[in-house]
Image: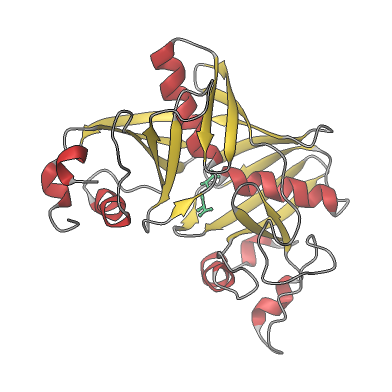
Length: 291
Ligand SMILES: N[C@@H](CCC[C@H](N)C(=O)O)C(=O)O
């Protein structure tokens, strides 16, 4: 995409349970931002983000937009629950509707407005096969994956990873003492473990009750975040698979709370808040070094 196409575009800064989200309206544009342009936007004053949701013209019938999801390192992600609620908010207000659908690389997501700043979205079924997550090779049980750390490596104490895809790859570790975990140090190493050929988002979770857990997330392509919606979904799915959680649970994250429900239909629904913070107009000068 050229700097002149991005310049003058409106971009909105929001957050979903504290996850820093930008919504960039590129409907009508013929190309998407390059990774270098995505990184340039992250560096701009006031625009630091975890995910940037680029709204492109709709591709699938019945959807309001096709959404490309950028991590702040410029890489693309297949899913972003918190960002999708933010997109739903922008489109619901623009179109004057309470329900709508958007398309991401992971599929079509139905979104419902429940209150002025509250949305429920349908993240679809989790993908639990080793090829779908993806893992590097077949394992007996994707809910209990040994990462085979060297003897004496402190990460061995985390135990097996519970893995799942919500359109993006996740590994969750269930711990009794969440406060003592080095989420940044451990997350950075697990993200690039060879078991995960497309890298992985890493969740450290503590089950507080059969319907409540607390979690801290290291996001692939970003680092530590205040919240990650798809990670919350994957953690609840994993907790259910391990026989430790009910199918509906509240997930407490440092930035807020999400309610996740893995329905008998196999679909995972997420309910959570969004906040609008500010609107900016992109300046061509931002992209001079990225051209
Ligand atoms: N914050 C998001 C997930 C972000 C995507 C992730 N970093 C990836 O690369 O898969 C969410 O709310 O789901």
